[in-house]
Amino acid sequence: MNMCYEDETEDYYEMLDKQSEEDELISFIVALVEYSAELEEQVVDLRRSVNQLSDKERLPFPDLEGDIYQVFDDYSAYRKYRSLIEERIEWNKNHPVSEIMKWQ
Image (cartoon, rainbow, N blue to C red):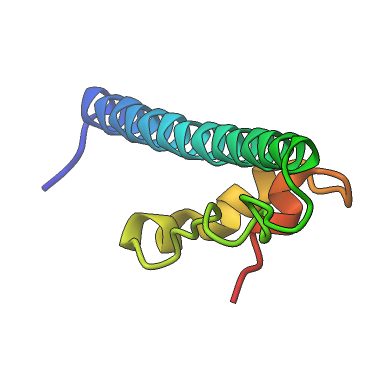
């Protein structure tokens, strides 16, 4: 079967549309991960403040971070996009996401 120019052009634009959808999905995942890290940092700060205002003998939150961090590497979509997520997040030592995400 011979492909004509119109077929090739249509295939090309279809491929671009799929790539655009994929790119939007990755951007969405990255935004959720970054937002999650910001929320987790806020919870830790709030717990620290509550601890400072509380009885030092019986702190309400002895482990500030123990139960709030969540990893998503058991999701197939997360595993699929892992390398792209890593590339898109601006990694630096002070970025909360860089501490939370330890790839295994």
